[in-house]
Length: 176
Image 1: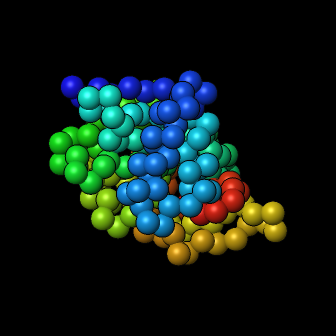
Image 2: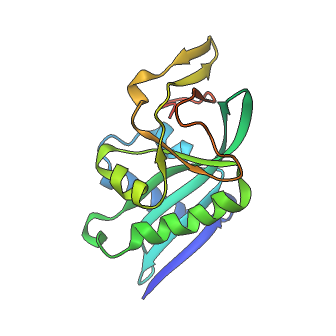
């Protein structure tokens, strides 16, 4: 039996949290502790097959600066489907659940996608950011040109200028 659930980080039991963390570290050879932390504190979507977690994604709140405003942004993190369960619609189900959260609670959705996932997100209405990117760091604003072409947004109550500057808030590890 396949089950999709959404749940806040605070309601994840120890076994589920451990299963999600294990899945992420198993599927991504470049996964870090900071990456794991980035996906906590918001809403998780989980796909379970016969009680086993085979897919996960989360959305957390961040502040992105654009056109002189700090936008309340639902930032998608830690999207994964177990390799032997891909191609069954689990990724689409995870994203559909989180997109509903983004549209219902945020001005904007955003994510940083690996090259091989960009077409998947584009087909769902996520728009690649074309303008310059940057981050507000403890030393002030800095450009993040290495992330250009990887960030996509899902307009919510705000329709951004995709050619304008977009700045993310500070965090340890990968900024985007």
